[in-house]
Structures are given as C-alpha cells and as structure tokens.
Length: 394
Image 1: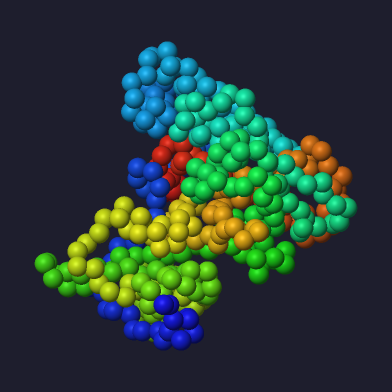
Image 2: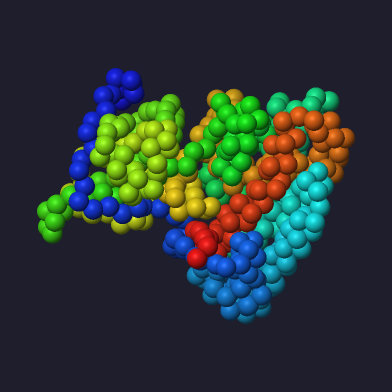
C-alpha cells in the first residue's frame, strides 16, 4: 500500500557519475532538426514529401495502412492519391486561415485539422470510409460572456473523432460523453500562461516534465537509475502508486546543480518542481524504448512527447473524468476538440463570439487561435511521419 505523500520523507539524491537526458518519443525515433526557415513552412515541406512523392508515401502506407501486406500497385496508388488529397486540402485551409482574423479563422483551421487527421487515420487503416462524419457536436451556447460551462458532445462511434480518440488513448469514448471546453484548454501547454492569466489556473490538466538517466560506478559495476521532475503536487494527487517505485528527493545543493547542469533549469523553476529518483537500482541497463514503455505503464498511458522544445522530456496529462469514467486525454485531442468548438461558433453562432469580445475568455481564445495551429501541426506531422519531430534554430 502506498504511503500518503505527506508521510513519505524526502531522501538524499544519489550522487551520479554520469547522466543522459531521456526524451519520451513516439514512432520510430526522436528527430531533432535544425532549420533556418519558418517552422510551419518546414513542417509542410516534411508533409509534402510523402504526399507528393509516391515512393515516399508508399513506404508510410505500406508499413501501417497495409501492415506489410502485398497490395497491388493499383491499390497502393489509390490509397496514396487519397492521402495526397487530404494533405493538399489541409494545407490550403491552413493557409487560408492565416489570412483571417481570429474570430473567422477557426472554421478554416478546423477543416485543415480534419483533413490532417483523416490523412493520419488513413495511414493506419486503408479501409477508412471516404464518407465519415465529425463524431461530435456542440451544445447550443448560452448568452453569457464566457465559455465556462460550454461542452462538446461525443455522438456516433466510428467517426473521425472517436477513431482518433481510440487511436490515441487505446480506449473507446462513450456516445453522449460531454467534453468541457474549459477543461480541454487546460491540457494545452502552448497557452498555459494565458490560461492562468484568464483565471483558470486551478484547472491545469497538463504539465511538462524532465527526465534523465543517471549512472554511478564504472565498467561492469555501473548502475543506472531515473530522475524525474514534475510540477509540485501533480503526481501525488493523481498517481499515488508512482511512489511505490520512486522516492521524492530533497531539494539540496546537489539536486540544484543537477537541475542546472543537466536540464538547464534555474533555481526559480526547479523550486516549482518535485524531483523523484528510482527507489531501487536496476541490475542491468535499459534501452530508451524500454524506458518509454515503463513510463507509459507507470502513468497509465497519460504521457505524451514534448513537441515544441527539448528543454522538457515528456508531458503528463490528468485523465478526463465524467460520470465515473476516466478517459485518457492529451493536448493533441484537446486542441482538436476546442478548434471544432470554435469552428461551430463561427459557422452557427457568430454572435456568441461577439458577446465574448470584452472578456478574458475572448483574449484566451485569440491566444489559442494565434499560437496553437503551429503546435497542432508539429504533433500531427510527427504522427503522420511516425517520428517525434522537434524543430529548432541553428
């Protein structure tokens, strides 16, 4: 039985002789790329390679959509042309959205996201229906000047959102599940500070974390263990069983030096984190893939890569709960849900956006529309290309 956090005394950090940051990644590999051009242009270039070059697109479809079967050239060409069409439409909608103001752009952005998600789902299922619906709807918004209390409702199974949700979470989400739009915003790291400023900070549902492999000893006597740092109180409040395997570390001078030297965290940031080390030293080294799998199992698949920076190694997401059921949610899904919500307001209830104009919620929505599309593009490009992509300047 796990001892409550407040009864678990912090221990001294073991003194390491070496260290290695351990980024959590999905797909074949962790791809850190330097680019001189705009990040959005770089990502669209990456997506154009498989969507415009048949031999490149064929490799992606063969591996996942056809699962190493032997399709005819006609079957493969048909699937690739459909994939190409989704990517082309997505880029057109995205570029159109960039020319619009924040109250109009969400409709185009959502249709861009929809086509990108269809392209992604097609890479995993060659039999994805050509006529497939959104999979959710919004409740008619009230006449208030805020979005708290507004919901998106899951509808049919086996539609775009429900297929995407099952692919991401390895769960089926019940029809009629109501997704709070304010809760969805709490999962999105790229607007975390705006979410707090708008008065919703107590509802943050995502935190970026750091992780490193530390070593002690040499040669055959070398031993390994993990050091993980999470926002204060985040783990203990939601994953108490974590403390069966990890122990909290005292915030002493050795820890502060490691936080600075390994993670480049200053004292102000590190003081906002809880650091944990593996309780017992494993007998043998483990590969990054084994470490990633262990992390997923520890947090019940509520982990995700950090796509915007290599400063953090993984993201941790609180499950979304309704009617006693817990659903694994992440910022990729949350962005998709909230952009659908906004696109529905633009299309059916534009007066509601005007009512929001003088409120902090309007500022939060504007921040979302201006910053999150790039973040979504980072994530979906990584998923389509089957590698975690991190872009940086030289």
